[in-house]
Amino acid sequence: MGNCCSDAGGRMAAVGGTAATDDQNNAVDMYLKSRGVHGIFCQIELSFCATDLQDRDELSKSDPMLVVYIKERDGSVTEVFRTEVVLNSFNPSWITKYTITYHFEAVQSLLFHVFDVDTQFQNVEVKMLKLEEQQFLGEASCALSEVVTKPNKSLTLDLVRKVESASSTHSQHHGKLTVHAEECFSSKTTAEMTLSCLDLESKDLFSKKIPFLVISKLAESGISIPVCKTEVLKNDHNPTWKPMFLNIQQVGSKDSPLVIECFNFNSNGKHDLIGKVQKSLADLEKLHSGKEGENLFLPTLVGRDYENKILKSKLFVDKFSETIQHTFLDYLAGGFELNFMVAIDFTASNGNPRLPDSLHYIDPSGRQNAYQKAIYEVGEVLQFYDTDKCFPAWGFGARPIDGPVSHCFNLNGSRNNCMVEGIRGIMMTYTSALFNVSLAGPTLFGHVINNAALIASQSLANEARKYFVLLIMTDGVVTDLQETKDALVQASDLPLSILIVGVGGADFKEMEILDADKGERLESSTGQVASRDIVQFVPFRDVQGGEISVVQALLAEIPTQFLTYMRSRHIKPCS
Image 1 (cartoon, rainbow, N blue to C red):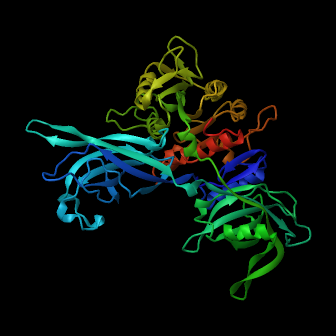
Image 2 (tube, rainbow, N blue to C red):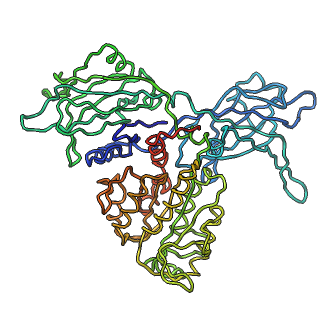
Image 3 (tube, helix red, strand yellow):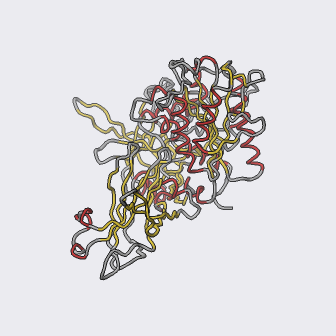
């Protein structure tokens, strides 16, 4: 699914994850991210059929064509696809399919229009047809997430057409449209490789080799785009890295050129290039079958030009095989859900909610504050992956009516039930809670994380097909840092990911310690190390004005964390 995995310590993590416990590997992940490796994607092929279309031809049946549009957040639409015209049919099954890149972290809104193509235009190429000259039969809309989360990946929608009368405008139903999604097969085909090197050269006799590999694909422009990396090996001139899983679609095809670079790790992030080779997956397969090595080369400045210096160091392919690897969408089709949870900071440092300078101020004009924006943008994406759309919602750092300061209270005011219905329900209970509690402090995360972990562990004990995503929003640095680390280390063995949004102008540097992408793997007070990275942190102010939204910055790695958990525990999509 657009990711490459490295099996480290029994865990399989995608690019941007943390497959090993060594500090060097976390630094390598940061190095890759600085070169543009982010997120997870796959190609989806959409097919379409309709039933009971309206007959608007007087002498024959309709000749329907489907047009697909992408609907942006601002309401604008862009046409992206047209099917062929099916002659004389009220129940067409169109052959032409639409391929779209699926992005988990975004709500991809689709709009469908069905037209009856007039007989006089049936010899005209579909892309040349003027839609205003065709008869409009009806429209439907959905998010791509709604389709891919269905068990059979099929969603049936009502086709409607607005009809204006003298007194009002109303919608009439005119048949149904079924949208079916199939993940492109190549996106599941994975090459498993074990790579090794012999006689890695050193710049001097006393330097140590701490090697790792980066595999990049070559774009048409000649730019190399990193897609995969190995773990770092210490003091090894003849390294053999752990098996790597490289998605074939991610590199284009088996014949697409790849650059395999061997670096010597430096803690300052400026890794030294030892040497490299340029080979396709097909070439690497031949090296394996022929049990041959390929000499590394090093671009070397000679005069004003670079020449490739051939090194004695060699790259070997000790293992090469192709497998079909289960993807994120396979698990969704197998009935797995993502369950959204939310926890909101009600400490006094947010300011009096009744005053406009408060981070909790509810603007009468309807303009959302940062807490509302984060709830909406994360919840808007995750709600499609939760069938009942009932979400645990908590507050922390406030004094509820008739009680002491609570570091985890139910947002809805109930003593026993933390569930809130829908994203709109969370927004309403948040607003209500602001005027039913007294803001206090300090900022403690441990109670909230433990509550979320309890729900996840109970679900796991019941063998439910659920993975939980907890959104924590805070305006300050956590006070119980070690207790929070302890809770996160314990939770790292559960089907749980945690998203933290820093709101306001506080210094959040300490918060980045909780995000393993920024440095060392979390360690508890007893010395236990987190089994995987489950935390993503982002200061809201860093992304609110740019092209990357907070929801994309936070959510891009959730499918990777999901797959890391499922694969490390050998959990299959189907029982």
